[in-house]
Structures are given as structure tokens and as C-alpha cells.
Length: 173
Image (cartoon, rainbow, N blue to C red; front, top):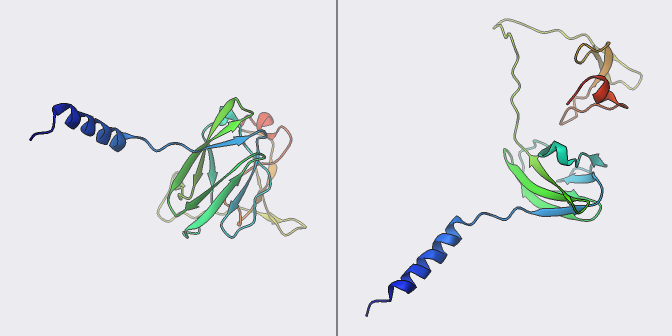
């Protein structure tokens, strides 16, 4: 005895629906733009203050230590934990103040940097000084600003700037 066509159609429909279903994006709640991130055995970052809807997606570069490990993203209300590995992106959303949604991407991918006007035998020399704390200081400017000091941190995983109205004064986006 043949099964009715309706039953075959229903079974086919549900199997296709399950096959094409998208993975649900994880949602974390927050009342403050300040978050803390714990990356494997490293200590927690303190107050990563970047949850801003207008800057979405927000990318946070995790350590590139090529080992599988657990990363925990803490807000003032909630947290999300994930197991990460090298050369991968991990995306989720943060519901900020019950109204704004920010997309966050935690990445372990290495980003390539390209040197412009690269001659085969060219070498670069960058003058620097050491300050009283033994930090490497490089003089430079941004967008034709007056010369200023930049701290070159060999242990940092990303580039950041600190200063009151630094972005507005130097026309940074």
C-alpha cells in the first residue's frame, strides 16, 4: 500500500525546513556600554567601553595564541561563554538598555598589514625614545595634527588611543 501524497509532502516539507533553518543568533542583555572579557587563562579586561549602536558591528580582537579556549563576555546584567579557536569569528548581539541592539564580533583571525611603496631592498627606521616607565615613545601626527607622543606597546593585541576629545580634535572615525 502506497502512503498518501499528503503525508509524503508534509514529511518532505518538515525535513527541508529543518535543513534550511538558520542558527539562532545569541543575545546578551546590558544596561551599560562597559563590558569585561575573559580570554582563556588571561585575566579579565577591565571595562571595555565600546557598546555603541552606531558603531555596530563592534569587533574585538582576541589573543592569537592558536589554542582552543573559553572566552567569556560579561555585561553588567548578563554574560555569554564560548569555546574559540584560531582563525575564527564569533558573532552575537547585545541588547543595550532594552532598546538598542549592537552586533559584536569576537575574532581570532590574523589581519594582514600591507606596506605601501614596498621596494625589495627597502628598510625602515623609526626613531623612538624611552620614557621614565621604559615605554617606547614614537613622535607622530594624525590627519596633519601637531606632533604628539604615541606609546608603542609590543604586548598589546590591538591599537587604541586614550585622551579627552582625542577623536574629535584629530578628526578620527
